[in-house]
Image 1 (cartoon, rainbow, N blue to C red):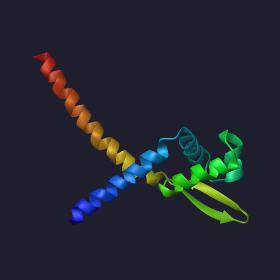
Image 2: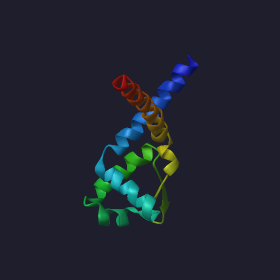
Image 3: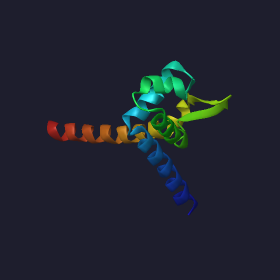
Length: 113
């Protein structure tokens, strides 16, 4: 039973990541933090094209998914990308990429005969 719980937890973590990354605004915010480093909500809002409350909601979802960290500095909240948070997505892509590569190779073999 312990393995089933671990698998469920792992799938839940991957689900949260995929849901967080499913929105273009969230991906853009994460990309900005990766590219430009730690920023406050005001700076992120200036380039996001959406209101500050929406930026804060998007950042909260990224934080729950483990993709960003947040800390208070004075009256402002500063966010930083947590690139290791993408680990479960990268692992999922590696496993499924390998499976698809095997299937395509099998199809090529069938076509060659």
